[in-house]
Amino acid sequence: MSATTRTKQHPHDDAPDTADAFERLVRLPEGPERQALRDELVRAWLPMAERIAVRFKGRGETLEDLYQVAALGLVKAVDHYDPARGHAFEAYAVPTVTGEIKRHFRDHMWTLHVPRRVQDLRNRVRQATKELSQTTPGRAPTVAEIAAHAHLSEGEVRTGLEALECFTALSLEAEMPGTDGYALGDAIGGPDPAYDVVVDRVAVKPCLQALPERERTILYLRFFGGMTQSRIAQQLGISQMHVSRLLSGCFAQLRDELLAGAR
Image (tube, rainbow, N blue to C red; front, top):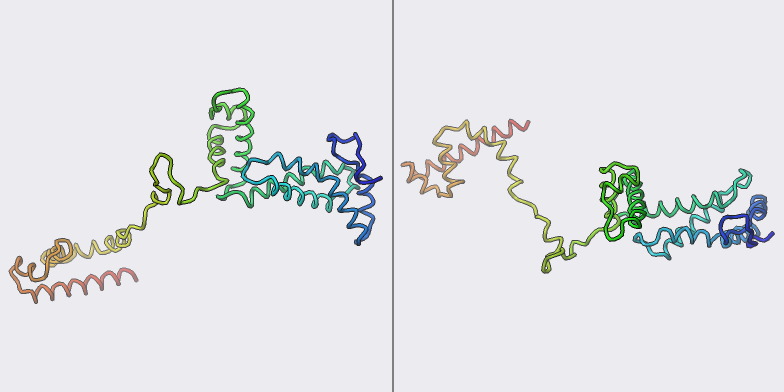
């Protein structure tokens, strides 16, 4: 019987009766005849695969690409189907094609990596929202309504709703709503140079506290008061040369203590 012969024993009008063809395919050795029969089986079941692909339209992927992914899943189903197991090809092919499309979304369409559990929550929340929208016209269903309908907790529903936003990401050049040309990237802060010295300040604090009061005063006036050595010398009543020697001594002592503490 030809692989394209139709029969009413399948639940879909376009499902061909290919039982005999698959029996022949299993017995044929590798070669042109087997390849031709394999291609004929793929063409015969292609409408079913495309029908499955249509279920996933509107999720960020073009229908043409979905058709290609579904066709790939169909080829895998034809290649791995074993009629000796006693199951109709359709029962094997439908989950195979569906799984191939879902893997495509998981591996290629998510902008952010989302755990499988969260993806499942997203699908359940999406389906529940779609079903509830038919009974709550004019408004979106609430989190509590979705949770009750999908048999989920409200926390799981919120996680699923957040995952709905993970398919695509905004460009940093995208204008933020309600602004006049203010891009998303403008809201991202830059590096703060003050963070680079936080650790150093914490490390040097006990060393500074151990210095004599005069040396601490000189360091404060020089680096926090912004005073020159000459002005410090004038304020303290000592020579500028003495201030310079005291500063050099402080630097050496602090360096030695910090290096010793780092060992």
